[in-house]
Image (cartoon, rainbow, N blue to C red; front, side, top):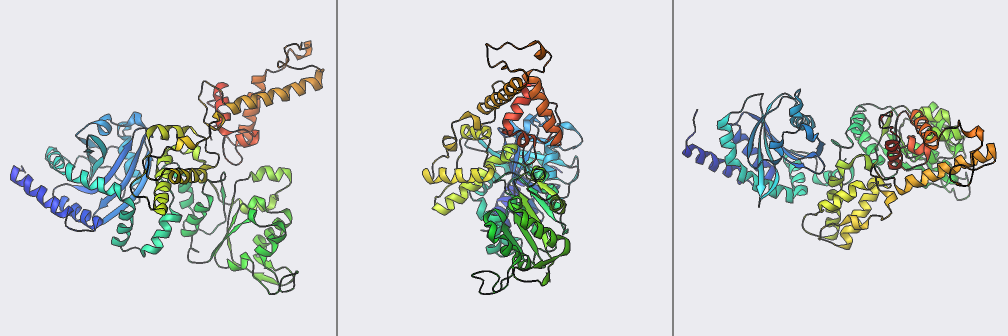
Length: 557
């Protein structure tokens, strides 16, 4: 079939009529998709961007037959495998997807990221750049029904769609939050009130990027009731992970009780967890059920479980073994049916060795571990997190517009080690928005100036690395003094006796210590139980030291 100019004009007019046919944006785009299916062999339309600094695709919206999907996902892709014309060419490109071909890794990553919305299969891609005022704002991507389904006539038709879709994409990006709720209403989901809480409190940013491995592990728990133990540094979002585990649990509609074990005074932990009877202690004027009884039939989330006193650990172990609790001031056993989700930023294995955490309790809890990576190990998630926290701060302050983060600021933040993780980032963004509402977010100006908090470049040791070198040297000096009564190389006047000639060098000693820590940590560098924690150094310091010692091929994390 050959299209004429009049056919093109009629096609474009009908397309624009569909786009403007409803004030409900999702509904209008779904109708547009239905119209385009008459001209293109497509399963879906994707609207997304490519971030050059982060080497990742930012997927915003997906339109399929009868549905509009608010995706909001960032997908890392290897730039070496990305066809340059798709990222930088100002125009159109016909691109066929063959996932087993390394040259097509970008479409493979794109399709896999959308697998929950659209079944994955080999398919052709037809992609157009969308530009506004000379700047690329995103990609219009037609996802074909099968491999080789597009031809030059389809390419010609797509050229007509670029400008109207560019306008739509620009408007969508300006009001993503409203689009999200419209999509929920249009798809017949829950009431906006409940979805607002989910969007604000429950949403996991980076689910398809830095947290993908973690979330894949979490979703394997779907339909299961086994105990889970969430491990991660402070501020990484362990409670949000617990919320997801609860939502995919058979007990999702049952009680979900949360307890911060580190926030309860030692003298009150027993009564909080297990309850008490009237007269059990001064002030107990009435009987009160504990958290286990309140969670009966549902789930109990024990956050910071590593803070529990040993005496409470004994009683907790009995509850987990026997499924019964005994209130303070009573001898009556009360049966409870509770699923346990625990979380900690402590190294429980080390605590066991130190005698501060019971080994039998550890193995009761360590049934299904879920590890949450620190923010410094998931840099691709930074832009999405910054914009999310900024938009939330804008809403609270009544600031209009869209947050802007300069490239230089983002690059500086990518080098920061984020010891407080996502919680630290959220507070930093709040501070930045409060100080300069509506202005570009120069968040790097609020970061510490001490270079020791930043990820170290390979060629230059960091402040902390120099400090650990000094500590190691001091320990070696003490060792030499105890053995021979002399100091080591830090004392230029010291002369080593003949017996020290065969001793290991400082580098050899440090190398051996690092390898031993890596072996003990199972190859893991950062996080609870990692080699950095065992050596009491910053993970970035340890990585820099490993590079200098030629340990890049050491066991991976």
